Length: 168
Image (cartoon, rainbow, N blue to C red; front, side):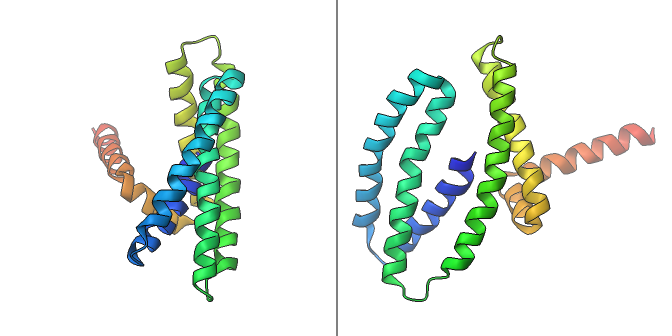
């Protein structure tokens, strides 16, 4: 969850900034080099933790890419809002880590079941926890995330169905 919501989101924003500046070589070069880190981490971490290790290996790619691209942008723009970015980084990291801990705990509890059940349970628990925590910390961003993913429409549909059930 940390990887997908935080590192990949920020890396995508940084990447698009380089594309706007018409500097596509830097982004592609950094992304290609960090794939090597991902492969090495994936081999090592999957031996230790199975599927969970594979998810952690994504951090070996997107984390360094985010840091390198961010550093290059700070060098290029002298008035980069680094304090605001760091505040957001800490905020989203804490929410992501709490959701990841919950997910990991559920995967451990579901260890006797099939891997699909473990991963699905962990994903649902992590996603729900992350959105709930994000809603408490940054209501506007949580609402936008629900809109972008279409989950808000699902909530509204469920709400309408529940109203119909309880009215009859």
